[in-house]
Length: 169
Image (cartoon, rainbow, N blue to C red; front, side, top):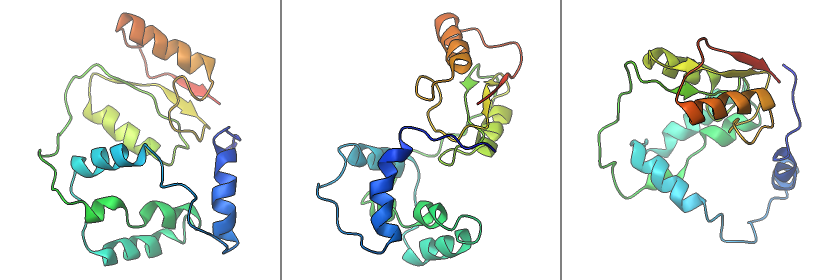
């Protein structure tokens, strides 16, 4: 897989460098203004394990395959301490929904396998794949004119592509 240095990666360096060198200090600010709403959406969507040992076990399992980001992704999150249970049952998505699913094969936030599973569940959908890309948020952010054109055409007309197109980063 060809890695692409994305503009957002540069912002990670000052955050990760102290962690790697074991000189991490608390952030100067009280946090992101997006963290609260993101946690409310994520934690309100489905219940999370409350036992810290479950997260510790996930961290340990992830180390062999993903030594740096595995422990970060599998660590305990605010949902473990969220004061409320989700208000609704999980929504099970299936059927002939005409959706355009736009994944990158190297996205670590929403895996390509998860996108393929969603495509199988939504039998009326199309999968517009950006192969070889590592970004999250492909349309309008990644800078692939072919993907942007296909998504824009879908948004303008509501017509899905006739096939499942693949573009290469």
